[in-house]
Length: 158
Length: 158
DNA sequence: GGGTTGCTCAAAATAAAATTCGGTTTTGTT
DNA sequence: AACAAAACCGAATTTTATTTTGAGCAACCC
Image 1 (tube, chains in turn brown, red, orange, purple):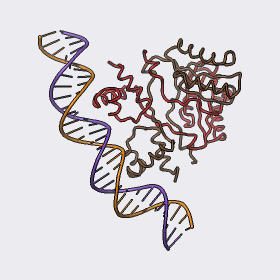
Image 2 (cartoon, each protein chain N blue to C red):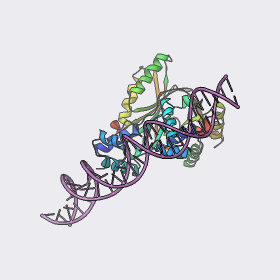
Image 3 (cartoon, chains in turn orange, brown, blue, red):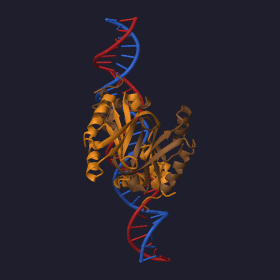
Image 4 (cartoon, rainbow over the protein chains, first blue to last red):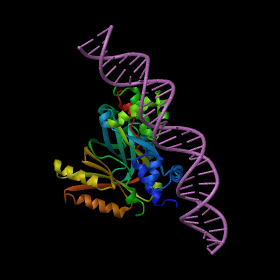
């Protein structure tokens, strides 16, 4: 039964509306509240869903600069990657980091209060492996499509 | 009063734990439940917070391919940008899109069930403005740091 | 000062949700 | 077909959340 139609629907709904009540969720998947809660708990225990995040409107909230940075490492050793990755995790302004294959190695999204602060972060990243890190910065002008969850319908089997 | 210390704390907490109960939230910000709920409702009405998303563990859930794509447009008109942006919004597998300044124009995150499907999406994007779109694809090997909210402490005034 | 506004709080009333449980149905297996 | 396991439902219970109410307090403006 592990990932039947109902569980997929639960995940799909919960992904887009994390604050829905169990009762409403139960109604939408045609289940009794008790059964529905059982399923949600199991899905959470299995780590298939959670944590639950509130989307904050950063632009309205405060002045900030978002930068997409592509990184190339001269040293392609796993140690070099691990060190860089650790730094990304430790710097709160680095909000996202992917290791990729292609014309660069690492992709970062960085959010800073202003350009001065971004520059500091940039320097800090460059200093990790002096002369062996190449960072290309791309200031975000506008958000064409904010992340709002994955298209589970397209992704899971059907 | 619009964005005092308490509201910032509410946003910060709600950003990272969207399913917290109002009572627990009230306790954490040292407010009565009613006052706390009032603030949350206002923040929501103002669009400063919401929607609330459940984070799904895509890797465990199903087989999928995530690609970071950088796009350059030969035609730098606003119309060309608008058309591309619209396409990004219409394709569910394109889960994120930023317009940037730098060595490329647009940044995309695309999640597909497999490479064949990704290739189709890639073609579709290329065909938008035949011969005038340059896409560089970077397959995600691993996630160094998943997005878990913004560092509001660093960003708002302090 | 007096009035207004907009916040706060606490308590009570209301509403809703989570949990539990026995009995039933479905599903999967032999 | 028979059995066992798992999942379901519905109702009762307990717990928790939400709204409402009334009153206090501070800031601001006339």
